[in-house]
Length: 294
Image 1 (spheres, rainbow, N blue to C red):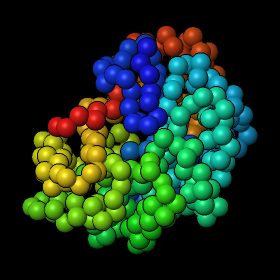
Image 2: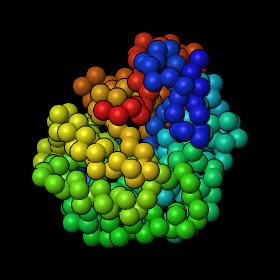
Image 3: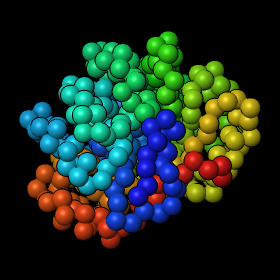
């Protein structure tokens, strides 16, 4: 059995996994204060109130019984979810490690709690998708960039040593020498890690086509960033579609999903039994995150 290392945020093997569910992406809410052009969260899920009435301990215990070791918390925007502290504590009580991905803005009390309790997470991940002009355009929010930069600074001021930046690589940032100026900004922020993500067509909006890129464009941009960030001390990570299209996601309505709309497999974490879910999971491969240089 593979094992998760919370210090490195890696599993003991990067091989293809069959019959195990080592990690789950948990979209705890579909509420969001952004309107991202590349958004690949399921926008039909609007059942946020469900988790306000459920027992998080029961949910996380079931995940543990399924073999989950790490839960990747996201949304929507998880800092808009009032019960985030209860959910994270339930994960910890059942021995599940957690990461969280945020746009850096949300309810003040939830944001404050996260900053004060960053040690409960294997990684705190903040999304920055370009310099200010491009990030604002992509997020359809005029304060998105300043909020994200400000949150990064607050994390650093709190001494957070588990700090990652995520960047969805779009057409807005791949032309010419843009990567040089962007890499200079990443160096100024000084995250421990920087993860580049290829936009996924799942749940795409009408704005997706204008910003999507090919696998070749993603690889070329990543290669340029590798060279530009050499010697920076920032670890680069890569999430091409070919990897995270094999992830299992848990939506805010309790549905476990594998694949995209055209071939999605859906299970109910609330209604289906553990053995039934395991039997279905065993039929599908899951690629663990790639940390290797391209």
